[in-house]
Length: 638
Image 1 (cartoon, rainbow, N blue to C red):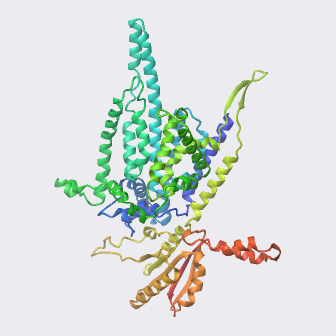
Image 2: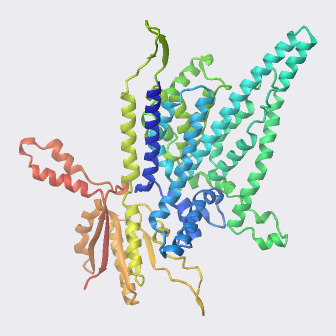
Image 3: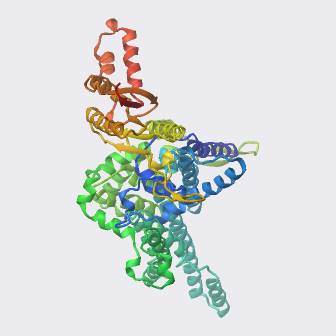
């Protein structure tokens, strides 16, 4: 057993180390613009006074995102970086601020926070006498933890808050069950006692029982409020756990239904100070409340803003959701679950089917009870899944928090821990027998799927964008007197702050005057506009810059799969000179998926005997070349 225990901890520690190493490499994959534009872009701009592209969600007139949670996570990591940079600069006269550091430091902070999920899983299992090894291995080897677990998504923080909440609810339920059983036992012994001495003894033992009714109430309310301000959809996740906390032990002889209402009141009252604290932070940040108004006591309800309620108001209108993309209600269940959780997700779907079958056959006695941890986990997985499926806009990251209950419920089906029995041999020596050994096939399949998804989302999907802005920021710093105009198409948005350009609205002071630094880098996002139209626009801007005698450099960034389009239309644009500056690998834009039809045709439909090996290799080489990101420099033709 000791050998297997050591083997498990070696595997688990290795997976933890991989999670941290992946932060420092760094991961070049770009999952969704929200990773940057709902945290990094805002707080790096505020902290380091950089030129930034503030998204509409942080508009001061109608903010729908609270700044409080990003400020205490990403913002705190940047404050630490800024403080360290001050000391480094004073000692070595060099700066630590770079695109790499702006990306990695907040990711490291979030990555370290993600280990709270592991912590909560371990102690939830231990408290409930469940096996933890299989659950920790499956959790830590999931690409959701390896990739999403170190990204600055609000969904990642939602996953962490949900894990903490489930742990405290589970611990409270287990604790209450134990105390209630003891209380009922002592009460029974008290009622059956024949002497006053015995009754006094059992009454005294009852008094020594620890209070349980309001256990962890402040933590539960605080986590719920923090999760709500992070993402208002957290209410879909918190609803069931909080209900289980309120309902625990209700129905037993020693706990009356009145306790449900008292607990509800306590939870609501304990949430008030946290809500006020976060509302005040948001009100100061968005300028609704100022220290001058506080000093003059000139404060009214108009001085406060609650972005979370604005978020609900905005998303309540289905037309607003449809602007972000309308999806069918079944997308989360049948597409996003297999995509996120692969093998584990398949077991989850079968588990849901099994529950529905028992319900339809009215075998209610086979369903998990409301007083069990399994019942909590099943409800905590299903409720947010179905509630979020009711919304028109659905993305896989919206349901990553359900990994915690899903791992708890189904991890043992992928990696089953062996049971041990103690047997006595003929020579009276104690031997440990492994009683169930399952084929590791599913576990190997799980590992292969998650390794593939880690590589894809961690390094390939939009993977050229980080190297592109890292390269261009260095390029721009080498030419401080040149204006850069950067066009992009068929790729995700480039974050402005990663170019490390000072905020053009910031005032700088010299000994005799004050001044501002003019904006030097301009980004033009053309979405999925055709290359011909983009080049026409570039030509028009070049003509204007030439007329104004502005020293400039015009760049066009697009997936290498569209290089052929550039070559085909180049003769139609004789007024400009188009030269490839650099190609960055790997990169895949689903908006411009590489054309692999020629290669597939050669290997599938051409007779092998007549197939030219060189031609096949050339076709394969072209396919690989198209998985890149091309940077073109464009100037007026001489």
